[in-house]
Amino acid sequence: MTVPTTAPELIDHILTRFHETHRRELPGIVGLARQLEAKGTTPTLADDLDLMAQALDMHMFKEEMRLFPMMEQGGNTLIAHLIEDMQAEHLSHADVAAELERRLADLAAPAGTESEVAALRAAIGKLFDDLTLHMQLEDDVLFPMFVDRSVT
Ligand SMILES: [Fe+2]
Ligand SMILES: [Fe+2]
Image 1: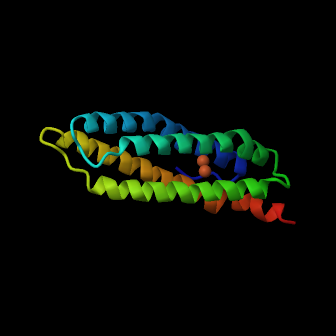
Image 2: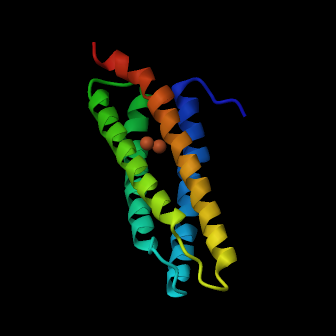
C-alpha cells in the first residue's frame, strides 16, 4: 500500500499498521519465550522482552495521548520538546532490540523445542522489522513535518 502523506492520515496508518500490531504480537512473544525457558532454553529472554513490551507500550501511549493529538491540531510550541523525547526513546528501543537480537542469535534449543525456537525467532524478527519501519516513519517522515515549524 502507499503510505499516506498528510499528518492525520500518517498517524492513522501508524496506529493501525504498527501500534496495534505491536500490542497484538508482544504478549504472545513474551509467553512463548517463557514457555521455552521452562523447557530449558538459554539465554533467557522473556523478562527483557517483557520490559521492552512495557517500555514500548508506554512510549506508544505518550504518542497517542499527547503527541499525536497535538499534531492533529496542527502543532504548537511544546511539540519540539516532545518530539525530542520520542526520538530519544526510539534510540533506546533500537539499542534494546539490538541487544536482544544478539542474545537471540545465541539461543540454544534443547531437543524437542526446535520448532518453537524457530517460531520465536521468526516472531521476534518480524516484530523488530516492524519496529524499525515504525520508528523510521516517525523519525524521517512524520516528525519533520512539525519540527521545523515549531522552532520559529
Ligand atoms: Fe509510534
Ligand atoms: Fe515512536
